[in-house]
Image (tube, rainbow, N blue to C red; front, side, top):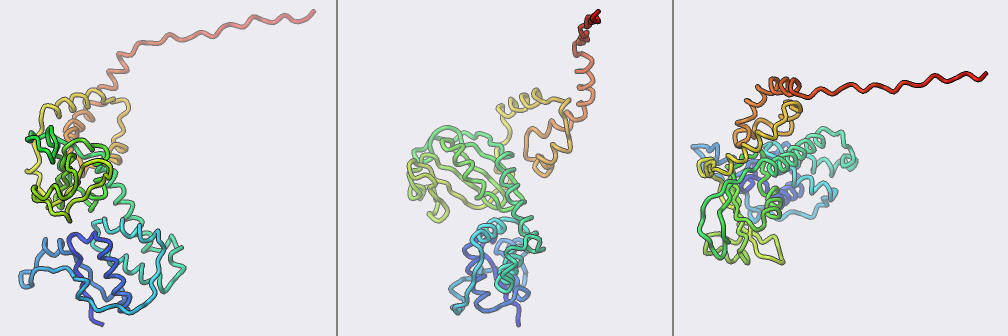
Length: 319
């Protein structure tokens, strides 16, 4: 059988689209080894000079699938949606291979030691970890911006972040809830987010050039709209300001050299995030001076007098 080449739209994280293509492949009984998966973004980054621009595979262009039963655990669908957020290009093939195998091997859904299942869980864990790191390592910088009835008042807080995986949308609810009254934007190489705290609904952003399909209103009882658009570059982010200098002064003063554990620090704050964190410029000098500071702290510590144990009176023997 000839290989079936499919191109997923954008970065390939649209789970509904992938699911529809997978159902069609199963209905046509196309085995996993005969499917080649691509994404529109990956094709655009490495274009073929002798090929036309990539066009995502349209569901309407595929033949109507016959009625073939296809069942998977409900929990697996949620896991597969998380797995698509990983940047590994093999994730599409692995998910379809698991889908195919679960139809032929029903016991596979309970086999936690299966190699494909283990790899899927490894990718999901990496996605969840990066969502957590996005919450922790995004640093906003204020930019003066005129007040607007749709956008609100006060400065626009802008952050630049470079995630490895496609976690921007997954991390967005945290920032929406925590900074619901603040104007903010998060710029990344693939996609940029913008929060409009005073926008009454999605339609109100039409004058700002935001299409309805690129925005949503997360709160039903209050205004606020989240929109997204193309990626940006580090040059689009604002430079450091006086508030950042204050933060660095505070960070340096709370550093305790006696509690320094470099390996544990690098595990919780991987070096790949350091170049976008303002406080990391202080880490190397503080590590180098930690031993001398610890010795000075011990030398200047007040001496504690030793406590003498009370002497017990000898007991008299009964006569």
